[in-house]
Length: 111
Length: 116
Image 1 (cartoon, rainbow over the protein chains, first blue to last red):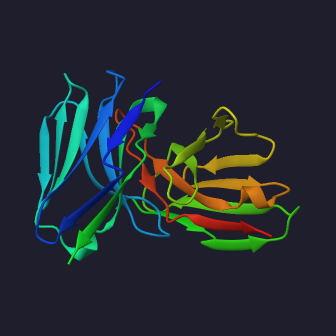
Image 2 (cartoon, each protein chain N blue to C red):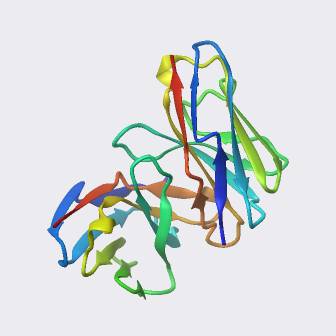
Image 3 (spheres, chains in turn blue, red):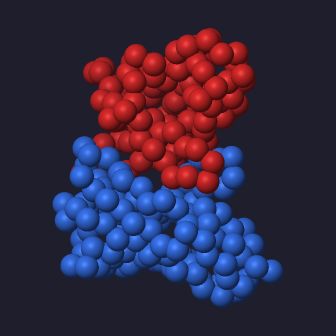
């Protein structure tokens, strides 16, 4: 089955700086890589996703890159704001097998 | 679009009772729904996958007789925790997918279960 590793487990950055979270996956058949943001006591919210046929996708301050050869993908948040503080999960999979999640990154934005 | 609701958001019950949690896709038809369990400061643990009209597929270590899943329609799935015990206390989250090649999942807001 799929195995997803996510790093770092905790990331603290100054407000306005960029944050990068990295994930690796093991199954070359995975074709869908979403990122979720989870605030305390709430369900995960899909913030961006990338499919295997592209290498990069951007949505305002958020971008995701995918390297299929190396089997890794990353989340980039620029100009971080206090409301970006949350736990972020990467996932890999797609199709009938569903998703395998990373262990999460607690992002802390320091004012 | 892609809104998923869960009810109740929070439930407290006595040990030995059963609790039903509903998951609804509000603006799309969900061919597949997933049920997850999440302990504090941990990742999501998939419990089972259910497809409309068929029996759920449970992950290894998840008791199907304890966690009953019914996916009776394309917009509703229910999880019933039977004879709940304190160790069943957790955050239960569902997600729904309309299927397709990528099977994107959209999550509900979660249900906090506390068993006394």
